[in-house]
Length: 64
Image (cartoon, rainbow, N blue to C red; front, top):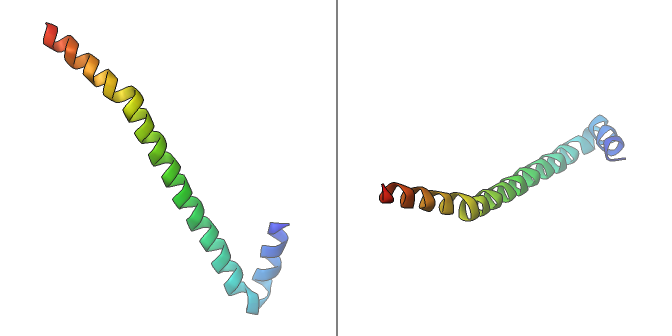
């Protein structure tokens, strides 16, 4: 359905600009959401896994 709307809009010179603009905005929004989710997951993994691992390694090194 969305593909039909885009195809119809791109073939209409009056509507092509608005279809392109809408498609571009949706792509930009998707990228922003992906970056936000990726950053949140990265920070979560860093806090829950990497920081305790680094502290454990530091404690092992200090004991030797």
